[in-house]
Structures are given as C-alpha cells and as structure tokens.
Image (tube, rainbow, N blue to C red):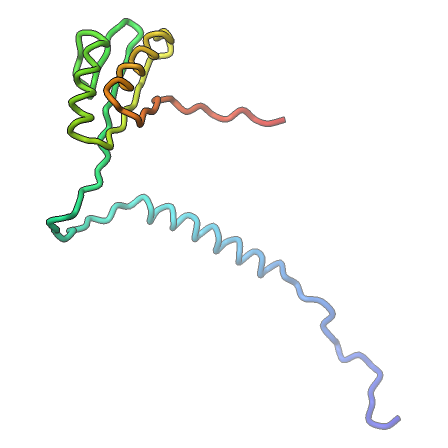
Length: 141
C-alpha cells in the first residue's frame, strides 16, 4: 500500500463557535441601542409646498373630567358637561377626522362618563379613546 498514510495529521474535528456567538450578540446589542437613539431624534425637514397637499395632522378633542364635577375641553374650563355637545359639533364640522380623548378621574361616576360619551356620539365623533395611566405588568407565575 504505497502512497497512503494512516496517521492523523492534527485534524480539526470541531469548530468553537463561542467567540462567533459573543461577537454576534454584542453587535445585536449595539444595533438595538443605536436604532433606539436614531428613532428618538427628530430630523428637521423643509418640506416642499403643494397646492393639493394636506398637512395630515390629527386633531384631538381632549376632555378632562375631575372628581369634583369640573370638566375641561382642550384645556378650557366649561360650565357643565352639556357644554361639550356644541363644542364637539363645531370641532367635528371643522375637522371630519376628529379624534376625542376622554380623561376621567378614577372617582368620576360611570354614568357621567357615559353621558359625555353619548354627547360625543350625538356630535358624530366616531373616534373616541380613553386616557389611562399605564401600570407595571404583574409578574406571571
């Protein structure tokens, strides 16, 4: 048997991927952090003017209801909850894509919130949201 060799020449039988995984994870963390920083920065733009363009701004009709009976619409004190209806109709007429946000104190009665919700529906405001304060998620067992 000429020409053949039967001894092993320090053959590599496995590849250590630990350094590759370490580098990949470090790069992933770097990309995640830099993406978050880039997305939080606003870029000032000088947009071109067009006669047919729209500003695409969302108009929010903000209603704040306190536990002591006071109410505010767009940071202006109103005499009663019933004053919301004409204000909502006017805002809806000016901005057909109006969005209403109701921020009611936790002590405000359910009936009062439903009354304001009904007033908004009478004014044909169809996009309504409720303002809440986020809480930490409960740990799962």
